[in-house]
Length: 406
Ligand SMILES: *Cc1c(COP(=O)(O)O)cnc(C)c1O
Image 1 (spheres, protein in one colour):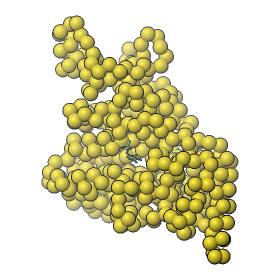
Image 2 (cartoon, protein in one colour; image 1 turned 180 degrees about the vertical axis):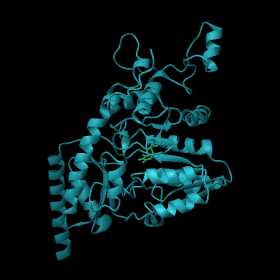
Image 3 (cartoon, protein in one colour; image 1 turned 120 degrees about the horizontal axis):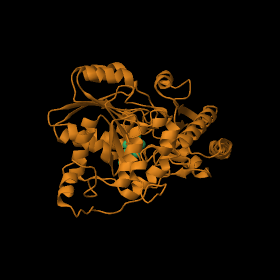
Image 4 (tube, protein in one colour; image 1 turned 90 degrees about the horizontal axis):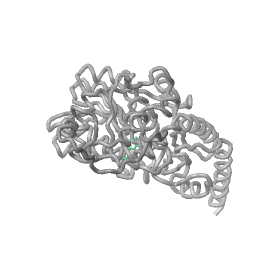
């Protein structure tokens, strides 16, 4: 039987069914959590054939695992990729991918607004290896093209970005990257495969922090890279030796979470849009960033390359962190935490979440005001989230009035 590539069904069906069948045993309908570190063979020749990759199977947990493999196959199919390889965290997926391909003397082009950890690799670790990093203003497509034209090994993009949800035109950038023979890598964590397919837009590799929307329940860390088989094999080799392997329990939790990915992402986008509209009408709000808003600088690009605008948004309050200190603790249906993409609505100031690694000056250079708050919309009922904001904003308005009278 040929392997089912699920070409004839839509993405929600793929999210439920894809990648699981090969890992099922005992007639169970659910993928088992295989915790075995090693796999035994009585037949020395069979063992050898599996070890050298001539025959399918598993040898040792740092290399491959059936539960982890089911997760890899599901995301591979959702991204429409030839292959996928997974990692212990999203940062491991990003760093291992970069270290697989970059050598001293190489050059990489990216944007200033990448995830804080990614930005640290660009500003701290790659320069130590004598790798030149050119970081462009996010959304300045001409500047990125100009840097790419000078030549580079990798063009690294993230869209939408963290936390001001800026959008980069993947198709246009992929063309520029291809023209100089660069590998085009896209962090698709915010969009998810439900809303955006970077490989179909011309990217070579797509990366996820599976910790976020893919898992969706904030209870497991993971990362993954999808793309061309030859490229993914090289990244897999780097990972199997360097050891940032995904844990089978994490793989199981993320795999289970992914079955509801489409439902979650749709509700999160609906809630994000409603929250963005609500915030835009608030006197005490300085700015709202959501690609679904017509006022968003990159709304048109988002409309072109995304199937939905996602669950991430951010806003700045008049009064900066002082106002944030009053507003956030008043919210009843919100976690104030560093993660995102979970079923619970989650709030966090950028300076303590996505960009805690950066200095205030670095954040300012990225256009991140000190009081910027990131929201990851959850799957709660929309009206309840708005009512929650209403009572919190009413309290903030009261406090502002009190302090102005003092
Ligand atoms: C969280 C995140 C990462 C890092 O993922 P971890 O699983 O926390 O290592 C990378 N990119 C984006 C966009 C993220 O949100």
